[in-house]
Image (cartoon, rainbow, N blue to C red; front, side, top):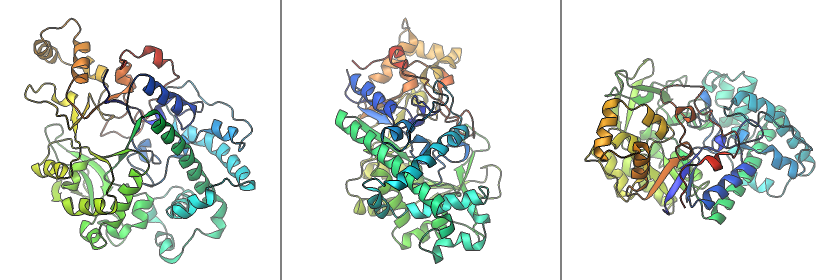
Length: 470
């Protein structure tokens, strides 16, 4: 038995009665499964509202939680709803838009009932979270403009909060509904998190490095991005060509104006990371290398061939972050072909990095360190069994020779990963179930289905788990 093993599974992938995983009984049952099998960590990925392609890494707001994770059955128990019928409870493929249409009508009913008897803590939640009103206003403006991107709105809406302190009175009901959903989402998530603490389970969440342009983050902080006079990005994010891609990767998010941000001590970014860190036990900084060096690409380009590396804010930023949040607990996603400065930055703040076995197993000189977090593969990789099934005959021959021709090569690889030195070892649940790539979560470089759509039908997987930590 190991005491440092965890499981990666997005909340959306939990079994659920309404077409998607949520913060209801399934989350609590999953935590009990982890406890019973001596798994110490649950990595949930970002909890933020999903954006284009249903990606939680391209959210409309860094502080908000995805409303589809609100459990309707719990609202029934609280008396806010009388009854909710089931909706695709046995599906193993999330249809986000259908789930939104189904859940929102019930959530609005719950909101109307809530107005009759507001719950304790609601006023304090609104007071303690000043981002709620701008977020609700942004979502409402988007809906009334047929989801048009904010930099195409009329000027009075682009600069709305330069001249106003609250939402327009005519949109009061819609905005308050958005705030209500955030209140319920946070209330339910905090119950899940408290239960995890009670069981001794550590929650790991994620913070993307970039924010999408169509977000409150960008709308409210537009002057801190590299944009033209009409707020269209002049440079966008990505990764230059490398051994894996002649065109590189074009992500397309706007680029921070770090010179401008320096003037107010990186207030926006410090708050963003600090806020997210207060919603979990450990926060993984996605694309950590960008704090040292980040790639910029001309916004008009259709590939990343002209991408160049610029120097990030480095120590200056992290000194500010730790000054304001001295007890913050972070993980560095330090993957890729990195400059030495990335390693130095990570090590200066004693941040644990990551070690991906699917990337390293063919390098006999590679080995993990006790300060690293070991993964067979992350949510962006193949499942371990999917990866194994895709190996070439040459790969199989190499691994058979490396492990002295074992009876069961896959089992040997699994145990090799299990026993590697690590600060913690995180398996996707799909790896414990020995699922192939039909259980894969995300294919980087692609947008939309089937990315982020994997969902467990029910809890029968508990009987099918091949690898228990007992």
